[in-house]
Amino acid sequence: MIVDAHAHLLPKDYPADAPSCFPHMEPIEDSTDRLLVFGKMRFPAKEVFFEAERRVEAMDASDIDAEVVSPMPPLLRYDLPAADGLALARHVNDFAAELSSHAPERIVALGMVPMQDPDAATAELAAMKEQGLAGVEIASNILGSSIGDEKFLPFFQEAQRLDFPVFVHAMPSPMDRLPMSAMGTYVVGIEGMFAAASLILGGTAAACPDLRISFSHAAGGLAMMLPRANYFWGGSWNEEPPDRERAVMPDDGPSPLEYARRFYYDAMVFDRRTIRYLIDLLGADRLLVGSDFPAMLREEPGAKTLRDMQLPDDEWADISHRNVFRWLGRGDLGSATVAAGAARTGAR
Image (cartoon, rainbow, N blue to C red; front, side, top):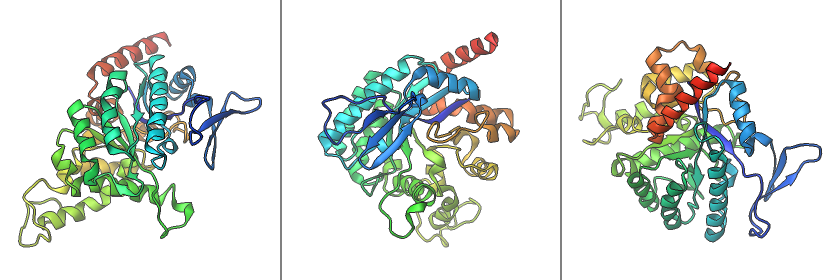
């Protein structure tokens, strides 16, 4: 069984009386696709973004049993007025719940909240869970503020209290040290690292030990920085016992690596050598399948690189599906997906 934990949705339409700052979808001549218009953005959205039947067909074609779908990241517009951001989030969440209802064992939907207003975002979580959404997606920074900033701590505490998973999607922030061509590549990697590191350094990870949180694209460059962080914490190489005389910043609490091993990471890193390093450093029990589909083309078949790595059975089972059910806290979903997968296999 394979569950793609990083895929995206877009609503098909928006209310006619929506605020002018909302996106809208325009028809494309002689096509079932639609054009997303959001400020300066013009994005041709394939039908699979918003039609449940097309999503299921696409999963079948790629040999994927289920997807965790989250709002397309450009919808996370934290620059909107707070009231408009909340209205947009509720519209997207309604659509996400409706999309999932067509095939709940195969389309698992996350929603969004207006993080520009931390109090409103926190208050919205309970309603999202009641609505049947499986978790919440947030960006890696909020108008340039790291998610580990103390002003966001109540949000994460409430997510932990509600047992509601969080998905952090890397998003560019204002940066003038790299050209614009780096926004979707290097900057996304930097942003993922900043987001995860800020939760460790800012105290959120310590304050929320039971928070279930996942990072897109393995939190960018985090894994390469963790051994150095561990040395500064404990003064030893290779995660050997701490040598406090060598430690630059002695700390008797959990090490940076121990904190990082509480998080989940999708393994969409484009290279089997990187995946092997992530398994070795963080553990196979921390990794998820991810594709960014349909914003990006999925490997064919889905998770092809992982399939070809000939991982031990337990590691493959963890990465391909068990970890995503642990992150979501949805054993019931796992049972339903297994049954649905067996039925599909028998029907072939």
